[in-house]
Image 1: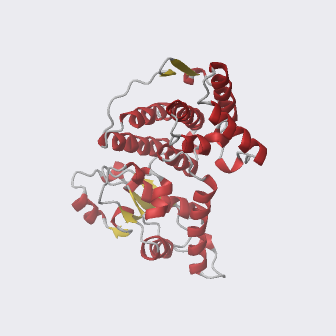
Image 2: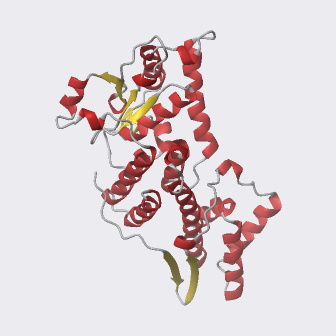
Image 3: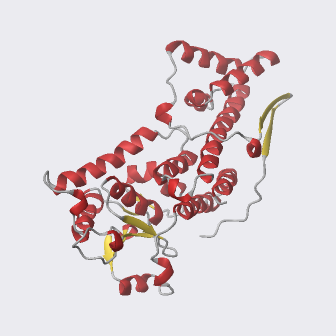
Amino acid sequence: MQPATRVLQSTSGVLAAGTCALILVTAWADAKVQPAIAASTVPALTAAQKKQVRGWIKDLGSRQYVRRQQAQTKLLTTGWPALPWLLQAQRDPHPERRFRARQLAREIQHRRLHREFQHLGLQPENAINLDLAMISIARIVDPLVDDASLTRQLDQLANRVRKLLGPNVSLEKVPPAQAVAMIQQVLFQQHGFTGAKAEYDHPRNSSLEKVLQTRKGLPILLSHVVVAVADRLDWPFVGVPVPGRYMVKYDGSQAPAGTPKKDILLDPFGGGKILTLEQLLEIVPSLDPETALTPSPRRETVVRMLRNLEADYMAIGNLEQAEQTARYLGLVDR
């Protein structure tokens, strides 16, 4: 899928409700780069702080301009920990409070995502963490994604593979065919990961959180669930950028000594089937094996994921989310 052309600019939001203007300025281009912050590292609010946040949200609907502005500033300063209450306040019956809560929630979300993708875009190729990139992309779909939960689920899948191998097996000596068979059994046979053939263009199919929940997703997300699990086992599975049908392979060049050095290609969208080159050419007749089966660079992988999500938002008519995703794409695609 080809994304729509986007003009990427620094942005300032000028938001108004009736005669009251709410001005939130975010200088994306000049923002100081900071390391991405995992949700699990954000301090939980104390009972007193939660009470303060609820009070500030209530004040967003105050008739006093100064009080509204003070509440807005306090909530922006609190940032991410205030987000669940702001999202809840979007259903508040008071229109002013509802409007301001919605705009503040968007601003807090965009500030964090901008920081994460900016940090990601400045990383050298070999330092890009695809797990964290997938989590940040999932946060575009749902801002309350739990980083620790997603990491834990990937860890659990890897642990199930270890358990299946038995206690006395050395992971680094597992032959390629056995490693592939173990991945197939746990991810595709036991857990049923497969392609999202219905509603293929839905944004949830680009979200690691939703893919782990539903066991369905786009080819690239399914492939990198495989890669994430294999990485935890120190097995050399890599994503391969097959046009229109991203896949994954066991990289035979990194196979243990004394085992076959042949690549093994898997089609996660097709339920984890092993494909020969002939079978692959039946799916993608115009394929150039010399380029399509080369491991995908990490940056290009993230770019492709973001382009998919942008196109998905365009397909369902959510132009605002498509535009925001395009901005994050511009931070990574350097």
